[in-house]
Length: 294
Image (cartoon, rainbow, N blue to C red; front, side):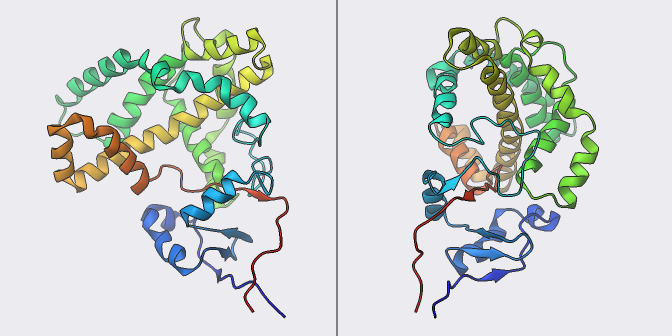
């Protein structure tokens, strides 16, 4: 008889201790085997890039339409919960807003707000990288370029916390986050309807995709919601991680200051070392007979 040689671990990647330890806690799991079984949640997991890439591209066997840890009502069931051809039909029209040419429209606005924030912060004694720099900046520019009207922007931190924790199982950490969120989902939905956005922002441009028939009007509203929820929390965390890594590696900061053209590569290295989203779940549809060890 043959059996799959897959280690079974009691390791919990979703505990507060593991999350607080950073991504290096996965080094041992990555070296141990291509695939492991997590006893706590009854799922297979891999920490190896090449296997993750194969699974993510193999949508005929590994689907995004069924989430590994169950449905979450605050995740828009568009793009992130779709396989081709539906995924492509919704993703492709909206991606034109995120090309270098599309984003160049906002370059002056981004730089102006960054400079103004920096000028304010250098006048203060204590600066919190997460709250004052990353959150302070994104809470200003992100809703503005999307074209959100009047809103309590501090509420976005509460929504971002819930959205970020949506990738984990329904453990105590998730349940506590959900309990703290109150009616944040209803509040967020109200911010994304067409009546709540300005005629100049990106959200209105996405709604125009519905007007033109490139997507349905229902899909247009879901895309506005998906762009907002998908880009807010991860951007805040990425900026925060960048500040942390530069503080720990001042020689690298000196290199970037001397040659600002290095910042793009430096930021990509931040994403590699401290990925803002460490987990992605897929569900197995079917797969051919696996390789077995005799």
